[in-house]
Length: 446
Image (tube, rainbow, N blue to C red; front, side, top):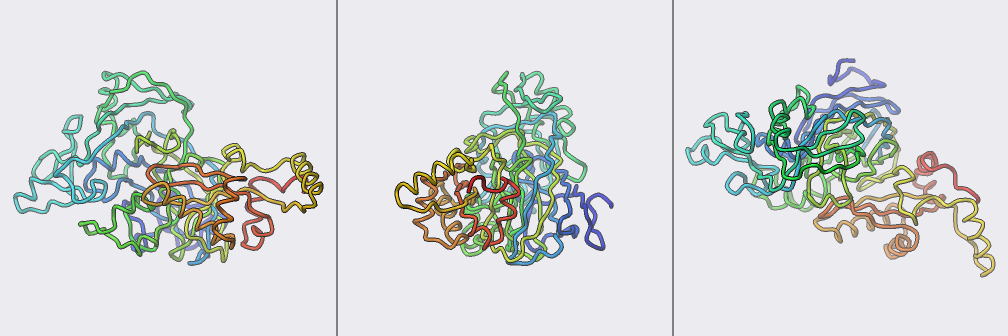
């Protein structure tokens, strides 16, 4: 089929190389892809590239969504991550802050040209071009003023080896060379609108080596309200509530989010993400892939890269979710949430019997994801979602996560993974047993 083009009927494979900054019911959907079919996303970098491109109304540029055949509101879609491969040979990132006077309410969403505003011309989301390198390179196409809405406080340029397994931050001289051909180094495809972030030529942190483990910061379904793609979550999304720009939402409207902007490092090859369907067709999209990301992403930004991502879609009828579930590779599970070995079950059963108690089970791990304006709010959101999904009291979720699970921080200020050992009969009742068993194997020793 034609890359990035809609098809007349459901296809077994849809390839996407077209992009958007807004996600929601008004955005064009490609496809449909058949239930059981595959979507191949050719993603472009998230965060910093879009952040220095004020014509984009989001801190991310993500793929156009793909309609999934048979997915209706109230269902869920399981996304099996079969392949995730890095394309970028270099990237630039760092800590940053909004540039006063160059945005309205939120520099991720509403960049402006102050010169055009003062002259009475159209000034919101200015079209820009590049001239030279550094932050002064981003210029308004109308008046040629510098209009980059973000300042990179401390930044670095990182290159990757041929196997995409090791990254090293480079010298100022090498960063300047990369800036001269930044679009190619960053792997930005022809349909993307963002400026390549390596044009900033930053090299404040030189010679640092790190390991690569690619993950997808955005992967899931569209919300039922139009949102900037970077704000489809409870923490960044909170900045939209009461904002002064046209993409402002109410707190009630923000509840229509799907929490696709996760920045969870376990959303990688071999994982399964289960996402809610809040618009008929689901609208599966992807982007904001990272070469590596430490839990918490405390710098707010990490190594944004272009990638090739292949997911197999599976419609789960009648599984109504408020937000995503994650079945990470088993080695990514917290110690207390890992599947029990047969010998552990035997010891547990013996201990229970010796104390005139019947061991509950079998059980298997599930991660419920939650978000909010700050970490505690995100935890509350995940706990509430888990209690609703498993139909048990909230306090029971708190106890189970404490003694046989964990809370991991995906991103600060507010995105978390709540790990639980869920009873198999509950998973069967809600329609998740086959999926969880396929990921982690049948419970052993029960």
